[in-house]
Length: 435
Image (cartoon, rainbow, N blue to C red):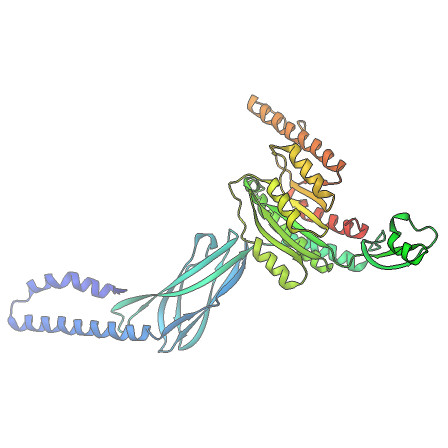
């Protein structure tokens, strides 16, 4: 694109009127000669400027990793194979969610390779693409301004900001290493090790009757503590995960907690996997160990967004029964306060808990609290809301007791305590060898 300089613009407006002041043919001849000369100079200036502009090139990484709600720098390399470009304006076209601090940069571009960066503060998780950069620079004679759009196709992956949550993880990990958290595991373990002679006092349930019949004397099984256990976080992405708690969505808290738990699980040499669901199961990564596997889990959940569908625990439990055969710790990050078929949920999770160890964590909200907590109602509308909130809270207490009776731990806690509560629960389960 070619934009005229202000001088060319003003001359094009004034020139037709100046003819009125020239009376002789000689003066008119000189005037038109001057105009012709300016036109030739303008055309030459455009051609020269375009040739220089062709020697300009932009390069960037194929993708960058950014953190939500933090300032991040995106760096570009500009290669100038011509003379120095002065008074250059560079504009980056980016989605609104990336929130560029200054989208336009004014700079000189020396000959050779030069780097420059933009500061962005993403406000939303997910994948975003920077498609193009617009460069505007004056022509050599400064009669025109040339604009060119460079295609970059830079993929920006915005991950959750885990800085606050990592503090809980680092503190817990430090206490484990320093011995502040007792690491004496109780119980005999669940993984079969070998057969041995019966010793007086051995319980009857560990006697191997087949080996006893073959040897003609009592033989018992010896077990060892499992070195690797499977841990799954099951994330609810249904409409209930859209709820805001302190201006942060419930799903945002679920994802952060899941990623931090994954780091702790990996540090304890356990296998980590993730599941996400609403009406259907949308994500399933089978539990495994290693940094590459953790990165795979992170890639699968960092861009999850709340959906408009209801939960379907029937589909979820059927999927888990088919695909997770080994006994595992299942951490449900969900809201079960608005279940339509509560009894069916309790019946299904009772069957599931016979094979797996199940934990359910929900974030408390203002719609589920005792009547006499918080501010007292003043108007009739406030009173009805308070009563509805109390009924929801009462249902939670009843559901919690029913789940406890079938061996399922259900906790409703505040968003700021979700992370530390889940990490400590995992450590206690591992220490006691409940899994």
